Length: 414
Image 1 (cartoon, rainbow, N blue to C red):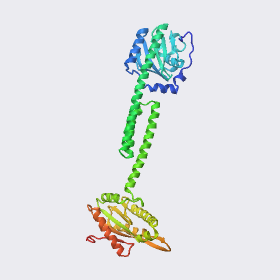
Image 2: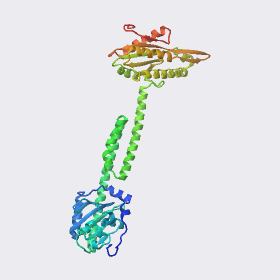
Image 3: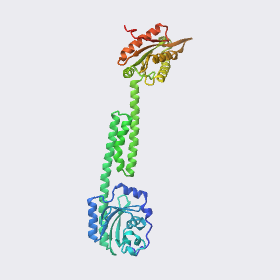
Protein backbone atom coordinates (compact mmCIF):
# COMPACT_ATOMS: atom_id res chain seq x y z
CA UNK A 1 0.00 0.00 0.00
CA UNK A 2 1.46 3.38 -1.00
CA UNK A 3 1.37 6.09 1.69
CA UNK A 4 2.28 9.74 1.84
CA UNK A 5 5.27 8.99 4.02
CA UNK A 6 6.66 6.35 1.71
CA UNK A 7 6.04 8.18 -1.58
CA UNK A 8 6.07 11.94 -1.03
CA UNK A 9 6.47 12.38 -4.80
CA UNK A 10 4.23 10.44 -7.18
CA UNK A 11 4.61 10.04 -10.95
CA UNK A 12 2.75 12.51 -13.17
CA UNK A 13 -0.55 10.69 -13.94
CA UNK A 14 -1.63 12.70 -16.97
CA UNK A 15 -0.14 10.47 -19.69
CA UNK A 16 -1.60 7.32 -18.15
CA UNK A 17 -5.03 8.91 -17.76
CA UNK A 18 -5.05 10.23 -21.35
CA UNK A 19 -3.90 6.98 -22.98
CA UNK A 20 -6.24 6.54 -26.01
CA UNK A 21 -6.64 2.77 -25.64
CA UNK A 22 -7.59 3.14 -21.99
CA UNK A 23 -10.11 5.88 -22.73
CA UNK A 24 -11.60 3.76 -25.51
CA UNK A 25 -11.95 0.88 -23.05
CA UNK A 26 -13.74 3.15 -20.57
CA UNK A 27 -16.09 4.20 -23.37
CA UNK A 28 -17.11 0.61 -24.09
CA UNK A 29 -18.94 0.44 -20.77
CA UNK A 30 -21.10 3.46 -21.66
CA UNK A 31 -21.53 4.50 -18.05
CA UNK A 32 -22.28 8.02 -16.94
CA UNK A 33 -22.46 9.60 -13.54
CA UNK A 34 -25.20 8.36 -11.24
CA UNK A 35 -25.85 5.38 -13.49
CA UNK A 36 -28.56 4.13 -11.12
CA UNK A 37 -27.32 0.55 -11.18
CA UNK A 38 -28.53 -1.05 -7.97
CA UNK A 39 -25.57 -3.44 -7.68
CA UNK A 40 -23.08 -0.56 -7.86
CA UNK A 41 -25.09 1.59 -5.46
CA UNK A 42 -25.04 -1.32 -3.00
CA UNK A 43 -21.26 -1.61 -3.34
CA UNK A 44 -20.54 2.02 -2.38
CA UNK A 45 -23.06 1.84 0.45
CA UNK A 46 -21.30 -1.25 1.79
CA UNK A 47 -17.83 0.33 1.39
CA UNK A 48 -18.84 3.42 3.34
CA UNK A 49 -20.46 1.38 6.11
CA UNK A 50 -17.78 -1.33 6.41
CA UNK A 51 -14.86 1.11 6.48
CA UNK A 52 -16.67 3.87 8.31
CA UNK A 53 -15.85 6.46 5.65
CA UNK A 54 -17.84 9.60 4.92
CA UNK A 55 -17.38 9.24 1.14
CA UNK A 56 -17.24 6.13 -1.05
CA UNK A 57 -17.02 6.15 -4.85
CA UNK A 58 -16.71 4.03 -7.95
CA UNK A 59 -14.76 6.35 -10.20
CA UNK A 60 -14.21 6.09 -13.97
CA UNK A 61 -11.31 8.42 -14.64
CA UNK A 62 -11.01 10.67 -17.66
CA UNK A 63 -8.64 13.58 -18.32
CA UNK A 64 -9.32 16.13 -15.55
CA UNK A 65 -12.70 14.47 -14.95
CA UNK A 66 -13.98 11.96 -12.46
CA UNK A 67 -17.21 10.15 -13.31
CA UNK A 68 -19.09 8.45 -10.47
CA UNK A 69 -21.48 5.71 -11.70
CA UNK A 70 -22.14 5.18 -8.01
CA UNK A 71 -21.15 7.32 -5.03
CA UNK A 72 -21.98 7.90 -1.40
CA UNK A 73 -21.32 11.26 0.17
CA UNK A 74 -20.21 13.23 -2.92
CA UNK A 75 -23.65 14.40 -3.96
CA UNK A 76 -22.67 14.90 -7.62
CA UNK A 77 -22.30 12.58 -10.63
CA UNK A 78 -19.02 14.13 -11.77
CA UNK A 79 -16.12 16.21 -10.52
CA UNK A 80 -13.45 18.05 -12.45
CA UNK A 81 -10.28 17.92 -10.43
CA UNK A 82 -7.06 18.25 -12.48
CA UNK A 83 -5.29 14.92 -12.92
CA UNK A 84 -2.21 16.11 -11.07
CA UNK A 85 -4.36 16.71 -7.95
CA UNK A 86 -6.73 13.77 -8.29
CA UNK A 87 -6.30 10.82 -5.93
CA UNK A 88 -7.94 8.44 -8.41
CA UNK A 89 -5.77 9.60 -11.32
CA UNK A 90 -2.70 8.45 -9.40
CA UNK A 91 -4.30 5.06 -8.81
CA UNK A 92 -4.69 4.77 -12.59
CA UNK A 93 -1.06 5.75 -13.16
CA UNK A 94 0.26 3.42 -10.45
CA UNK A 95 -2.02 0.51 -11.36
CA UNK A 96 -1.82 -0.18 -7.64
CA UNK A 97 -3.62 0.75 -4.41
CA UNK A 98 -2.97 4.16 -2.90
CA UNK A 99 -3.36 5.25 0.73
CA UNK A 100 -3.00 8.84 1.85
CA UNK A 101 -3.25 9.12 5.62
CA UNK A 102 -3.15 12.90 5.86
CA UNK A 103 -3.79 14.67 2.59
CA UNK A 104 -3.31 18.10 4.11
CA UNK A 105 0.29 17.16 4.88
CA UNK A 106 0.89 15.60 1.46
CA UNK A 107 2.99 17.70 -0.97
CA UNK A 108 0.57 16.97 -3.86
CA UNK A 109 -2.88 16.38 -2.41
CA UNK A 110 -2.85 19.32 -0.02
CA UNK A 111 -3.70 21.44 -3.10
CA UNK A 112 -6.72 19.30 -3.99
CA UNK A 113 -9.79 21.59 -3.76
CA UNK A 114 -11.69 19.24 -1.43
CA UNK A 115 -8.64 18.89 0.82
CA UNK A 116 -8.08 22.62 0.91
CA UNK A 117 -11.75 23.07 1.81
CA UNK A 118 -11.44 20.63 4.74
CA UNK A 119 -13.84 18.07 3.24
CA UNK A 120 -11.19 15.37 2.74
CA UNK A 121 -8.18 14.47 4.89
CA UNK A 122 -7.53 10.81 4.10
CA UNK A 123 -7.96 8.42 1.17
CA UNK A 124 -7.80 4.74 0.38
CA UNK A 125 -8.26 3.52 -3.22
CA UNK A 126 -7.69 0.43 -5.35
CA UNK A 127 -7.51 0.23 -9.16
CA UNK A 128 -10.53 -0.95 -11.14
CA UNK A 129 -8.87 -3.10 -13.82
CA UNK A 130 -11.14 -4.71 -16.40
CA UNK A 131 -10.83 -8.17 -17.95
CA UNK A 132 -8.78 -6.70 -20.83
CA UNK A 133 -6.19 -5.23 -18.46
CA UNK A 134 -7.23 -1.56 -18.73
CA UNK A 135 -7.38 0.55 -15.59
CA UNK A 136 -10.82 2.11 -15.87
CA UNK A 137 -10.53 4.06 -12.63
CA UNK A 138 -10.74 3.16 -8.98
CA UNK A 139 -12.83 2.22 -5.97
CA UNK A 140 -12.05 4.57 -3.14
CA UNK A 141 -13.10 5.89 0.21
CA UNK A 142 -12.43 9.32 1.68
CA UNK A 143 -12.63 10.47 5.26
CA UNK A 144 -12.83 13.95 6.74
CA UNK A 145 -10.13 13.18 9.33
CA UNK A 146 -6.57 11.86 9.13
CA UNK A 147 -6.45 8.08 9.54
CA UNK A 148 -4.45 4.98 8.82
CA UNK A 149 -6.50 2.43 6.95
CA UNK A 150 -6.01 -1.15 8.06
CA UNK A 151 -5.17 -4.15 5.83
CA UNK A 152 -8.66 -5.50 6.56
CA UNK A 153 -10.20 -2.28 5.25
CA UNK A 154 -8.00 -2.47 2.17
CA UNK A 155 -9.21 -6.06 1.68
CA UNK A 156 -12.82 -4.80 1.72
CA UNK A 157 -12.02 -2.66 -1.30
CA UNK A 158 -10.18 -5.49 -3.05
CA UNK A 159 -13.19 -7.78 -2.67
CA UNK A 160 -15.62 -5.11 -3.80
CA UNK A 161 -13.56 -4.17 -6.85
CA UNK A 162 -13.76 -7.78 -8.05
CA UNK A 163 -17.53 -7.61 -7.71
CA UNK A 164 -17.69 -4.32 -9.61
CA UNK A 165 -15.48 -5.74 -12.36
CA UNK A 166 -17.85 -8.69 -12.74
CA UNK A 167 -20.94 -6.45 -12.83
CA UNK A 168 -19.43 -4.15 -15.45
CA UNK A 169 -18.20 -7.06 -17.57
CA UNK A 170 -21.61 -8.69 -17.57
CA UNK A 171 -23.34 -5.42 -18.42
CA UNK A 172 -20.94 -4.82 -21.30
CA UNK A 173 -21.48 -8.33 -22.66
CA UNK A 174 -25.26 -7.92 -22.49
CA UNK A 175 -25.06 -4.51 -24.16
CA UNK A 176 -22.74 -5.89 -26.86
CA UNK A 177 -25.09 -8.80 -27.57
CA UNK A 178 -28.02 -6.41 -27.73
CA UNK A 179 -26.09 -4.13 -30.08
CA UNK A 180 -25.02 -7.07 -32.27
CA UNK A 181 -28.63 -8.21 -32.47
CA UNK A 182 -29.61 -4.69 -33.49
CA UNK A 183 -26.96 -4.71 -36.21
CA UNK A 184 -28.21 -8.04 -37.54
CA UNK A 185 -31.76 -6.69 -37.58
CA UNK A 186 -30.61 -3.56 -39.44
CA UNK A 187 -28.78 -5.69 -41.99
CA UNK A 188 -31.88 -7.81 -42.41
CA UNK A 189 -34.10 -4.79 -43.07
CA UNK A 190 -31.67 -3.45 -45.65
CA UNK A 191 -31.39 -6.82 -47.42
CA UNK A 192 -35.19 -7.18 -47.41
CA UNK A 193 -35.42 -3.79 -49.12
CA UNK A 194 -32.90 -4.96 -51.72
CA UNK A 195 -34.78 -8.23 -52.24
CA UNK A 196 -38.05 -6.32 -52.63
CA UNK A 197 -36.53 -4.42 -55.56
CA UNK A 198 -36.91 -0.99 -53.99
CA UNK A 199 -35.12 1.89 -55.78
CA UNK A 200 -31.55 2.49 -54.64
CA UNK A 201 -32.38 5.74 -52.81
CA UNK A 202 -35.13 3.97 -50.87
CA UNK A 203 -32.83 1.09 -49.93
CA UNK A 204 -30.16 3.50 -48.70
CA UNK A 205 -32.84 5.37 -46.74
CA UNK A 206 -33.92 2.14 -45.05
CA UNK A 207 -30.27 1.38 -44.23
CA UNK A 208 -29.63 4.84 -42.79
CA UNK A 209 -32.73 4.67 -40.61
CA UNK A 210 -31.87 1.17 -39.43
CA UNK A 211 -28.35 2.06 -38.25
CA UNK A 212 -29.13 5.50 -36.83
CA UNK A 213 -29.78 4.28 -33.29
CA UNK A 214 -26.87 1.86 -33.41
CA UNK A 215 -24.44 4.64 -34.26
CA UNK A 216 -25.39 6.62 -31.17
CA UNK A 217 -24.76 3.64 -28.87
CA UNK A 218 -21.64 2.26 -30.57
CA UNK A 219 -18.18 2.27 -29.04
CA UNK A 220 -15.07 2.66 -31.19
CA UNK A 221 -14.92 -1.03 -32.15
CA UNK A 222 -18.62 -1.12 -32.91
CA UNK A 223 -18.40 2.09 -34.93
CA UNK A 224 -15.81 0.41 -37.13
CA UNK A 225 -17.97 -2.70 -37.47
CA UNK A 226 -21.00 -0.55 -38.21
CA UNK A 227 -19.18 1.40 -40.91
CA UNK A 228 -17.92 -1.83 -42.50
CA UNK A 229 -21.48 -3.19 -42.51
CA UNK A 230 -22.89 0.00 -44.02
CA UNK A 231 -20.19 0.01 -46.72
CA UNK A 232 -20.80 -3.65 -47.51
CA UNK A 233 -24.59 -3.28 -47.62
CA UNK A 234 -24.31 -0.12 -49.71
CA UNK A 235 -22.15 -2.01 -52.21
CA UNK A 236 -24.70 -4.85 -52.28
CA UNK A 237 -27.54 -2.37 -52.82
CA UNK A 238 -25.69 -0.58 -55.62
CA UNK A 239 -24.83 -3.85 -57.34
CA UNK A 240 -28.39 -5.13 -56.97
CA UNK A 241 -29.73 -1.86 -58.31
CA UNK A 242 -27.38 -2.17 -61.26
CA UNK A 243 -28.67 -5.66 -61.95
CA UNK A 244 -32.25 -4.47 -61.60
CA UNK A 245 -31.64 -1.57 -63.95
CA UNK A 246 -29.94 -3.90 -66.41
CA UNK A 247 -32.88 -6.30 -66.29
CA UNK A 248 -35.26 -3.40 -66.69
CA UNK A 249 -33.31 -2.18 -69.69
CA UNK A 250 -33.34 -5.67 -71.15
CA UNK A 251 -37.09 -5.86 -70.66
CA UNK A 252 -37.64 -2.44 -72.21
CA UNK A 253 -34.95 -2.08 -74.85
CA UNK A 254 -34.60 -3.45 -78.32
CA UNK A 255 -31.40 -5.53 -78.09
CA UNK A 256 -30.08 -4.42 -81.48
CA UNK A 257 -30.68 -0.67 -81.51
CA UNK A 258 -31.03 0.19 -77.83
CA UNK A 259 -34.32 1.96 -78.54
CA UNK A 260 -37.52 1.12 -76.70
CA UNK A 261 -38.78 -2.28 -77.74
CA UNK A 262 -42.31 -2.77 -79.00
CA UNK A 263 -43.83 -3.50 -75.58
CA UNK A 264 -42.23 -0.56 -73.83
CA UNK A 265 -42.87 1.72 -76.81
CA UNK A 266 -46.60 1.01 -76.70
CA UNK A 267 -46.83 1.32 -72.90
CA UNK A 268 -44.79 4.51 -72.64
CA UNK A 269 -46.32 5.92 -75.81
CA UNK A 270 -49.87 5.58 -74.44
CA UNK A 271 -48.88 7.47 -71.31
CA UNK A 272 -47.05 10.14 -73.32
CA UNK A 273 -50.07 10.86 -75.55
CA UNK A 274 -52.55 11.40 -72.73
CA UNK A 275 -52.59 15.16 -73.35
CA UNK A 276 -52.21 14.82 -77.11
CA UNK A 277 -49.29 15.18 -79.48
CA UNK A 278 -48.03 13.47 -82.63
CA UNK A 279 -46.77 10.12 -83.90
CA UNK A 280 -44.12 9.58 -86.57
CA UNK A 281 -44.05 6.18 -88.28
CA UNK A 282 -40.67 5.50 -89.95
CA UNK A 283 -39.98 2.70 -92.44
CA UNK A 284 -36.54 2.14 -93.98
CA UNK A 285 -36.71 2.07 -97.78
CA UNK A 286 -34.96 -0.79 -99.66
CA UNK A 287 -33.98 -2.48 -96.39
CA UNK A 288 -35.09 -5.91 -97.66
CA UNK A 289 -32.70 -5.59 -100.59
CA UNK A 290 -29.82 -4.74 -98.27
CA UNK A 291 -30.66 -7.56 -95.89
CA UNK A 292 -31.17 -10.17 -98.59
CA UNK A 293 -28.16 -9.32 -100.74
CA UNK A 294 -25.73 -7.96 -98.15
CA UNK A 295 -26.58 -10.30 -95.31
CA UNK A 296 -28.05 -9.80 -91.85
CA UNK A 297 -24.84 -8.33 -90.42
CA UNK A 298 -24.86 -5.53 -92.98
CA UNK A 299 -28.57 -4.98 -92.40
CA UNK A 300 -28.12 -4.87 -88.63
CA UNK A 301 -25.31 -2.32 -88.91
CA UNK A 302 -27.53 -0.12 -91.06
CA UNK A 303 -30.40 -0.30 -88.57
CA UNK A 304 -28.09 0.64 -85.68
CA UNK A 305 -26.80 3.69 -87.56
CA UNK A 306 -30.27 4.87 -88.55
CA UNK A 307 -31.71 4.23 -85.07
CA UNK A 308 -28.98 6.34 -83.48
CA UNK A 309 -29.69 9.24 -85.84
CA UNK A 310 -33.42 8.89 -85.26
CA UNK A 311 -33.02 9.00 -81.49
CA UNK A 312 -30.61 11.94 -81.50
CA UNK A 313 -32.71 14.11 -83.82
CA UNK A 314 -36.00 13.40 -82.06
CA UNK A 315 -34.72 13.75 -78.48
CA UNK A 316 -32.91 16.99 -79.32
CA UNK A 317 -36.20 18.44 -80.52
CA UNK A 318 -38.51 16.81 -77.94
CA UNK A 319 -36.64 15.51 -74.86
CA UNK A 320 -39.78 13.79 -73.54
CA UNK A 321 -40.32 11.83 -76.77
CA UNK A 322 -40.59 8.05 -76.79
CA UNK A 323 -38.55 6.52 -79.61
CA UNK A 324 -38.74 2.81 -80.33
CA UNK A 325 -38.47 -0.01 -82.79
CA UNK A 326 -41.74 -1.72 -83.65
CA UNK A 327 -39.92 -4.54 -85.41
CA UNK A 328 -37.86 -5.22 -88.50
CA UNK A 329 -37.16 -1.90 -90.23
CA UNK A 330 -40.11 -0.02 -88.67
CA UNK A 331 -39.61 2.67 -86.05
CA UNK A 332 -41.94 5.05 -84.23
CA UNK A 333 -41.46 8.34 -82.42
CA UNK A 334 -44.21 9.52 -80.05
CA UNK A 335 -44.01 13.30 -79.57
CA UNK A 336 -46.10 14.40 -76.58
CA UNK A 337 -47.60 17.88 -76.54
CA UNK A 338 -46.28 19.10 -79.93
CA UNK A 339 -48.34 20.83 -82.60
CA UNK A 340 -48.49 19.79 -86.26
CA UNK A 341 -46.06 22.45 -87.47
CA UNK A 342 -43.39 21.33 -84.99
CA UNK A 343 -44.00 17.64 -85.68
CA UNK A 344 -43.83 18.14 -89.45
CA UNK A 345 -40.56 20.08 -89.11
CA UNK A 346 -39.08 17.19 -87.15
CA UNK A 347 -40.35 14.73 -89.76
CA UNK A 348 -38.78 16.62 -92.64
CA UNK A 349 -35.43 16.82 -90.81
CA UNK A 350 -35.59 13.08 -90.20
CA UNK A 351 -36.26 12.42 -93.88
CA UNK A 352 -33.02 14.27 -94.65
CA UNK A 353 -31.06 12.66 -91.80
CA UNK A 354 -32.09 9.06 -92.43
CA UNK A 355 -30.30 8.83 -95.77
CA UNK A 356 -27.47 6.35 -96.09
CA UNK A 357 -25.54 4.31 -98.64
CA UNK A 358 -24.62 0.67 -98.36
CA UNK A 359 -22.12 -1.09 -100.61
CA UNK A 360 -23.41 -4.45 -101.75
CA UNK A 361 -21.07 -6.30 -104.04
CA UNK A 362 -19.97 -3.75 -106.62
CA UNK A 363 -22.88 -1.36 -106.33
CA UNK A 364 -24.02 1.21 -103.82
CA UNK A 365 -27.61 1.05 -102.60
CA UNK A 366 -29.10 4.37 -101.54
CA UNK A 367 -31.14 4.09 -98.35
CA UNK A 368 -33.86 6.47 -97.28
CA UNK A 369 -36.84 6.47 -94.91
CA UNK A 370 -40.51 7.00 -95.66
CA UNK A 371 -42.24 8.73 -92.78
CA UNK A 372 -45.90 9.09 -91.90
CA UNK A 373 -47.16 11.71 -89.44
CA UNK A 374 -50.50 11.64 -87.61
CA UNK A 375 -51.69 14.03 -84.91
CA UNK A 376 -53.36 12.95 -81.68
CA UNK A 377 -55.93 15.03 -79.86
CA UNK A 378 -56.16 14.61 -76.06
CA UNK A 379 -57.83 11.29 -75.30
CA UNK A 380 -57.00 9.70 -78.66
CA UNK A 381 -55.63 6.20 -78.31
CA UNK A 382 -52.12 5.39 -79.42
CA UNK A 383 -53.35 2.42 -81.45
CA UNK A 384 -55.60 4.69 -83.49
CA UNK A 385 -52.92 7.32 -84.13
CA UNK A 386 -50.28 4.68 -84.87
CA UNK A 387 -52.55 3.09 -87.47
CA UNK A 388 -53.10 6.41 -89.19
CA UNK A 389 -49.36 7.22 -89.15
CA UNK A 390 -48.68 3.78 -90.63
CA UNK A 391 -51.08 4.49 -93.49
CA UNK A 392 -49.48 7.89 -94.03
CA UNK A 393 -46.07 6.20 -94.28
CA UNK A 394 -47.34 4.05 -97.18
CA UNK A 395 -48.53 7.21 -98.92
CA UNK A 396 -44.99 8.59 -98.52
CA UNK A 397 -43.64 5.46 -100.22
CA UNK A 398 -46.11 5.91 -103.06
CA UNK A 399 -44.91 9.49 -103.46
CA UNK A 400 -41.41 8.28 -104.21
CA UNK A 401 -39.92 7.26 -100.82
CA UNK A 402 -37.62 9.24 -98.56
CA UNK A 403 -40.27 11.87 -97.78
CA UNK A 404 -42.71 12.80 -95.04
CA UNK A 405 -46.45 12.56 -95.51
CA UNK A 406 -48.75 14.27 -93.02
CA UNK A 407 -52.18 12.73 -92.72
CA UNK A 408 -54.89 15.37 -92.52
CA UNK A 409 -58.08 15.11 -90.46
CA UNK A 410 -60.52 12.75 -92.18
CA UNK A 411 -57.86 11.30 -94.49
CA UNK A 412 -57.06 7.56 -94.58
CA UNK A 413 -59.76 6.56 -92.14
CA UNK A 414 -60.97 3.57 -94.15
